[in-house]
Amino acid sequence: MRTLFTYIVASSIISAPAEEKLFERLDLMQRDLYSKGTDQMIHTKGIYHLIQNLESSSLDSKNILAKAWRNIALLENAINRKDQEQYLSETCLILKDLAANFRYAAYICPVTNKIWITKANIANNPYLQKKDSGKRIS
Image 1 (cartoon, rainbow, N blue to C red):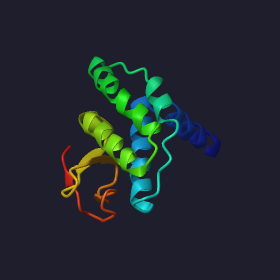
Image 2: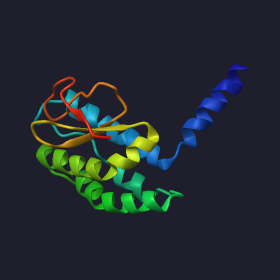
Image 3: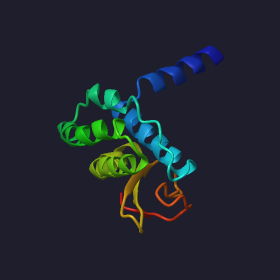
């Protein structure tokens, strides 16, 4: 029985929609921004490859992802923390409506007006390193 359960869990993770994997990665980046200092860069490698391999069945989803593609490429190749924050915010702005389909929420920073996507119910603002200081927008 335990082996069957392990198989079911593993297969559900492997077969998760590519969009969901993208949002998981964006959520991880948001947590990295929050936990690191304001001058430390975050790990962004691999996100461009992730969006490049999406095979979404929804035409709306494909159009949204195509718009985000440029920002994701810039995010992955950013050379400083300020650029990473800007490209991450722009990417999240584009993807915020699609995120709701995968139980992710978009928040906006009241000070910087930058956006982030997270699955958490508490808005840990990665741009100010403050808990519960963002406004939910989707």
